[in-house]
Image 1 (cartoon, one colour):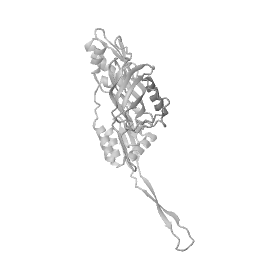
Image 2 (cartoon, rainbow, N blue to C red):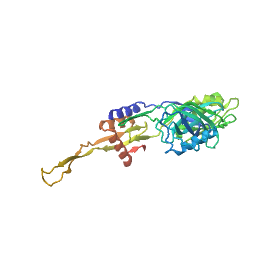
Image 3 (cartoon, helix red, strand yellow):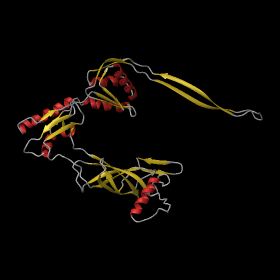
Image 4 (cartoon, one colour):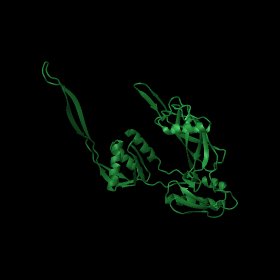
Length: 365
């Protein structure tokens, strides 16, 4: 575990120079975004792995309503099928989608179905936030997970109650976009930073002076950069040209810790003031040994089960080390010399932040 952590941190430390990124990879155009779609539908064709209608009454109601619309009356019949399941269908409508296009959809079980493998999603309208139908989904579901069980053991791989339908939704309504007539655009940084906003504006102005003979961009705040679309060029072509410009985004001094997996990511600009650190682990082990006390033969005593408890405490020696972080190399080398495992490094970084020695934002997930 520690070796993996050391390799991850050293790999980050080896890249001192910030790689230049294309402008379209670090910014988004305000107003150009995807729209989330949601729908409720039925999956049929399951091999006995669908909802039990007794525990999922909404599935039975949906089946009855669908069949009644098709001219089949089962209101007085007791439906006990296990080959159908109620599902929620989600999708994202990309910007500039037109009627007639196709998008992928994700299907997830809503009831107590055990698997959606082999199922067919019936025609399901997908609604946007304005309660308008933007797409209709239907098709065979591809499920990557599976579940097999017997009387004494079961095996589950992945999530068999969720799947996807590739190109399963047909777009019926185009999302409104107002890019064609725009002559003033705002670029939003994906990672807001004043330094990055200034660099983006400078890169655009340097390009526009040589291409159009004037400055076209100015930074508004740490998130937005305003640009003017010059006359004589379409907005799409202008964005395509500007999107290829290279900038070096500023990275915030940040340490991200995931305590569940022991993952630690340290930013390039993280600094640590000179501190002395020691870390020792205390391990307490409690062992319970069952003991059965049996009475002598022909006596009136009773068999009594007791236990013997053994407690051992072991504390590892802690070595006092000096860690100074003038740069990322020094910080990584100082932590690696202490020979700590990920939980120890996490505890030390949290203690450094509490003492004020860690000059960075600490994010614990």
